[in-house]
Length: 236
Ligand SMILES: [Zn+2]
Image: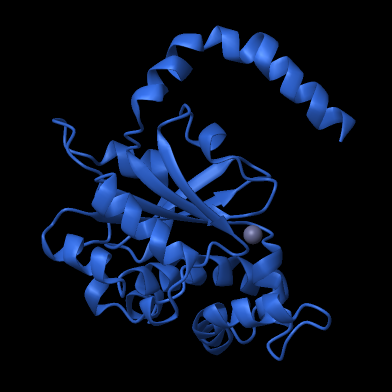
């Protein structure tokens, strides 16, 4: 705790002063450009990996970057609703990551994790992704299965996201793009799901393929409604 207190003091005395104008301008309100949904894992810093400032990202974090479907709505649903309808956010990123403990729990303990009843219930939201991975990668190593599960889980949670009325409406009105990212923290590599290839591809490659006049990054909006996990990750 000593380290956190010292850090808070250093923030007030040095970091805040260096960005005083930015922080003061935020008093008027927030206008974040994206909703970033990622895991609670301490090894992920959304503003660091996107090089953004306070006020730029609206964030939902939980174990496993999970978005329960609308039928099981809770805090995530309320936050998504606020992001789209009150803040006018038009991009949602669901970001999974390497070596995810939640994915390991879902992969290795399908019948529940002893002593963790709430986590057991929560990870049922990953069961469909686990089923696909075990069917398609039955003979793969456990490490490879874990990697693929993290990717399949991102797509499954995007599918859940599209069941929320506020998201479905925004997609239908072409007012929202949804992006699936994977962050490999041990290398710093970030990849984004590409509908054309059905793979997660380095974001540098995707950026290079953008038209010269800029325009929005291609998202999953157009196809998400007919996706049983984007046709089982388009690997079939
Ligand atoms: Zn995680």
